[in-house]
Length: 402
Image (cartoon, rainbow, N blue to C red):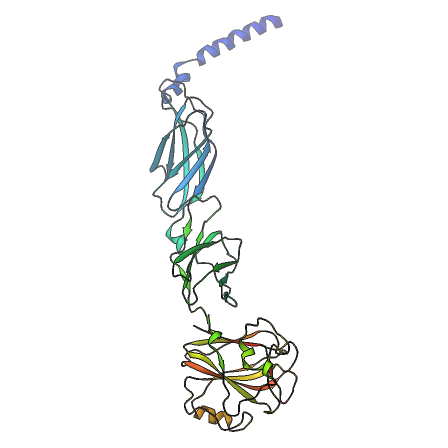
């Protein structure tokens, strides 16, 4: 038998085998498709999620398939769903907000559908965090700088804040103007201080911070409540201050350097004659006394500014009393019995101050809580930076109360 005859026989057997294979059983897959061809519409592209407050916004690129007429989103293992019509073909970016969720991590599955009800292959986005009260309860208002929360002056107040430690978008600040009206300002997240002009001294300042959990979030979350900056120290009005000359008070070097130089508004060390300058007739410790013009409640802070030079107090005492009746001491300031006599006559030691520098720079000290009302102040200078036994020099003194 030739090779040609063998090939012909093989071809016949192969044809018979193919024909036998094309039986009814070979088309059994049709029963899974109802005898129809399976059609898959084009699916959504580039799905992204933007979380919110018990809700989420899903975004995707519209399917390029012109047969797509709607989309359907499933979550909670397909127990929940939301359906929406496909937008006009000119719109390529599609989005939908799914509300009334719980604070949880979700997975969403999106299908596109054509008019015949055919659906696309699924497109899934997982680990979508939805935020709510639990996240909100973790938020705190921005912290004020504890060492220097504010600077108060005659025209307003400046608040100093720490840097935020999460995605802070603003801090709302409510405060009272000098005319009694309420004003609102906003501190941006990249600013650490804010100036509140015409702030009314002594009134509370309220502030509340706003955050977003991630940069793509669709909702802003606020802290549960406002914090307040209370007990803001108020400068005692130095326009009411008047010099006194009680028994054994130190004298002044000249008329130009009398006690009124202590409250003329200096903000930095000054030099002669724009200073208080004692005479040399009362060796240290010596004291001087002045009237604040009225009784002051809750004295809280004291500041001293020394001379631009020398003889600046580096150790001194601050004494106070509300009424001078019977308060004049008979002992000189350098007498061993002076302290006991002062206490016996009703004077209250408000603070003993010691500083380790040259005494020239502005130096603030806090006064103890619970002080009685004070009208008259006595400063007893014990030691000066130069070591001089007689002279003391001061550029300015100031008081604040709560």
